[in-house]
Every structure is written in C-alpha cells, then in structure tokens.
Length: 574
Image (cartoon, rainbow, N blue to C red; front, side, top):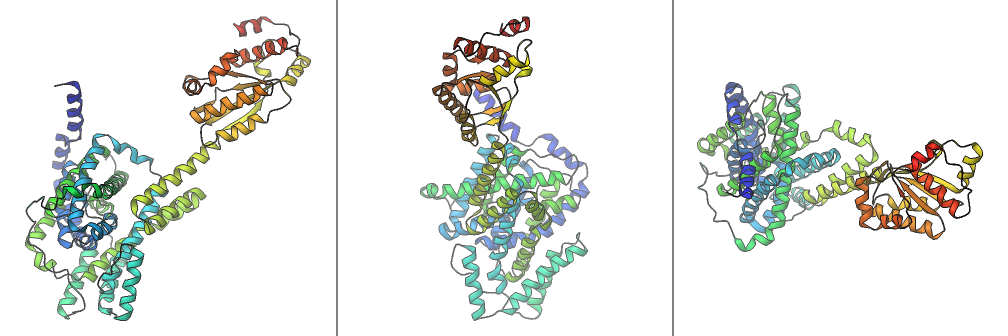
C-alpha cells in the first residue's frame, strides 16, 4: 500500500466509530433508554409536522427521523446529538420541492450526503468556530420567523397557495381565509400552541406537544370536526430502499441546492453539538466525525423516501436534560419512532394538520431567545447590524444567502475594527541614539530626522490611510520607520509601503527602516520594496543602526557635521 493510500485510509478510519463510543453505552443504560423514550415522544409531532411542511408528507418526516436518527447516532461525533428533520432544513426544501418535485429533493439529499462526507475528509469541521454569534442568532431568528409563517395555511385551515416566497404564500393564505374562514382549524392550532407554551413554563419536564396533539385529535374525532383536515393515510412501515428517484441528467441543476443543504446541515449540526457540550460536563464532540455521521445519514435517508436531515437543537436539548449519557438514547429515540411507524400508523393518520401547525408555531416561538437577542443588540452596533441583516436575509432570501451575507458583513466590520488598530506614531529616538550626546546635538538631529513606529496590522483594510499619513511628512531629510511592531503585513501593505518610500524619495527625503521581521520580509521582497531600500543601503536590523546610517547620510549630503562617535556608537554600527 502506497503512503498516500495509507494516509487516506487512516483519515477514513479516524472518522469511523471507535470501541469507546459503544463501550460508554453500558455505563447508564436505564437513563439512556428513558431519555430516548422522552425524546421520541417530543420528536413524533415535530417529525410529522416538518415532513408535511417540506412538501413530501408526514411519512417522509418519520422516515427521516428513524433512518437518519439511527445512523447519525451511530456514526456522528457527539454522544448526545439527536438528528432528524428540522425546521431550518424545511425552509430550504420548500422551494426545491416547488421547482424540482419530490424526486429532486431526494436527489439533493443524496448529493448533500456526499458533500458532507467530503467536508469530513477535508477536516472542515474545525472552521465552525469562526461563525460569529450574531450571525447564528440572526440566522435562528430568521428561521423561527419562516417556520412560523409556513404554518399559517394549515393553521388557518386553507389549502397552501402557490408561490415560493414565504411572505407571499402567507399573504395569499390570509386572503383565502378572509373569504372562507375556518375557525375550527384556528382554534386547534392556537390551542395546541398555547398548551405547549404555557405548560412548558409550569412543568418543563412534561412533553406537552404530544399531550396537546392527542387532545386535539380526540376532540376532532369525538366532536366530528370535519373542518379539521387530518394528515391522511400513512404506510405501516418504511418503504424498501430504492434509487428510482435518481435522474443523472439533473445533477448539474441540483448541485447548487445540494450545496445549500449540505452547508445548512453542517452549520446546524455543529452548532447543536456545541450547545450539547455546553450543557454537560466532560462531553466533547468531534466536529469532523459529526459531519461524517450527518453525511452517512443523508446518504441513507433518501433511499427510504426521507428528507435531508440535520441535528436538532431542541431534541438534543431534551435529550441532555432528561439524563442522556451516550448514543444509546438517540438510538432508542429512532427505535421508538420505528415502532410507532409500524404499529400506530392508522392512529397517527388521524392527527389534524392544524394541530401539527400549532406544534410548529410553538416551536418557532420557543426558538427565539429574547435574552440572547437583547444581549447581541446591546453589545456593539456592529453586532446588532449583523444580527438584523442576517435575520432579514433569512426571511427575504434564503438561508445560505443569509449566512453568506452575515459572514461577509461581520468580516468587513471586523476588518475595519482591526485596521483601526494600526497606528503610525512619531517617536523620540533619543533612547536609541548611539553614544552620549548633548541637547544641542540631539536638537540638530531632530531638525533633520524623524522616526515613526508602526504598530498593528499593515494590510489591505487600512494600508491606504497609512500611505496618506506617511506621505504628509515634511521639513525633514530622513524618515526612520521602526517596523518591529507590525503584527501582520500582506501584499497591499507591502505595496503601500513601497509607494510611500518612493514618494518620499522623490521629494528628497531618504527612508531608513529597522526591525523588519522574517514574516514581513517575504511580502516586501515579493513587491520589490526591499530592492528599493537595498539600492540605497537603507535597511537596518536595529533602530540605533538606522540612526547611525541617517547621520552618515546627512553628513555626506553636507547637511550635518559628523558628530563624534563614541565607543557605544562604534559598537552599535558593527
């Protein structure tokens, strides 16, 4: 086996489950089984609701929760993560269903699985920590708004109007409701949402979502509420795996949606894993393994008719709070849902769509953490701007564009803040003046020499301001640039420095430099700035040497008499 093959295999093997991942399941199996059962009860209405909202039906949501939930638990990088259909993914899938149909969504899920595995092999999980908190909070706020608006047609008891933009669809649904009101559906949706929100405040450990859905279903059956449309017939089991939906000719047009789905799955899953780590002591997820597990889950779910999956923050939080300790809890959650699919499909089919809309409306409301939003808005104006822009872009455009816009704006604001840290300060060079000198001698040098210290980064974001400041130097014959405190320099910074030196030289002002570090030397050398300095012999290792070179230059120019050289000066010039 070649060294490249060996490295590739070692990388793949590092992403596969280890014996320790399964050994921990035996530590507290009773707690894990109880946590898994609780999560399954919470997840059932969510899986049904997100399946319906995606456009593929409740059975697609259940298939995703069972298949993706089990495989992500086995191969993922977190012991506590629970995966399945989520509201954020539903937001992305709705326009894909409208444009490409159910087969397009299944193909997109398959392609996204391949992309996630590729990201895992490339070790891309570590970059999640670079996503700023205002982007995440704005993203979450926007998703909550979109999820809530998506439920309006079912909550109002009207057929979903045509359209891709959620705001347009919502407005048309309201218009249809105004023409033919369906107060039964509204009452069921509001009632379920109210039970969930009010009940969670008093008894947070009780799964009020399933309690409310059961109550709404019983009410619809007992009182014969014909206006409350049910989910409809569900298959009593998972379909046989199939690739019949694949259309190779459509791969090109589906690549962009697949990238969007993969990016969202990676972002939401790694964010959820980070939240789970923060809720526990001693748990630490592996981001690359998590991407690999989500990739495997999304490869398999479409074969059974499931929608693309991600880790679910709400279900993961329930899992942790109910005492989960290992992957056994998430596996139990998938197994319980599988039993429900096989044994209780006829009962599940009677659940009113309005009741599921109420569950998702309550979920959307609970996603909005007012305290976190208030903290971000008060932190800095930049954070508030990034949060608002990301949320607005999520609502008006789509999730991927929203994240890109949020990252771009956050990056630009961060660059501006960093660029403002760069300083060009005139400094007294007396402490670095070689030898002993009188005040008269020092004053004579000051008349002709000025020293500047550059602090901070010298790069594209702030380099031109530096050029303007330096070019304004007047009434001197020599400028000494002390560069040892430059923290970073790119090609733009090096070019600006070269231009500044050239402009000063054309005005008859010589430029000496001191303290150029190895990291800066490469950029300066690449643009020819060092050649300009070497031509005149004006690059020095230390500031005392640069001062000595400036004195020698002024003496040769007949501007300054040669001051006596002391022993210290001789030592500094060596």
